[in-house]
Length: 139
Image (cartoon, rainbow, N blue to C red):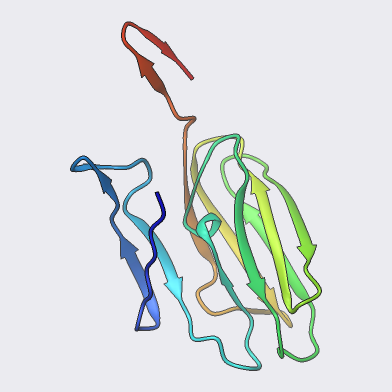
């Protein structure tokens, strides 16, 4: 299933997703929408608002036309989360982090020593998904 959402306003948004009238795991999702203007660094993606323990949480940082300055990134939470950042050579960086415990993680992104718009981001990390098959249950 694929869902598209095109916000028309800048700011904090909440998206509630349900399946068979039941909220899916992690819903409601909160995320920040920012206009992409030259000279600004922005970030977007699901890993800024939610994720699942043991699965990479991903997001993208847009630095196109931001000018000179250093980019810094930190993920702070109930456990250490290994961070990987890949320069896509198109003005964006793909970031993933691997949360190893459930809870709230703070994602701090700075450009030229200043927090980018919307930062710090708070991501709710859920425990592993549990699937039920009749009387048997597995993770």
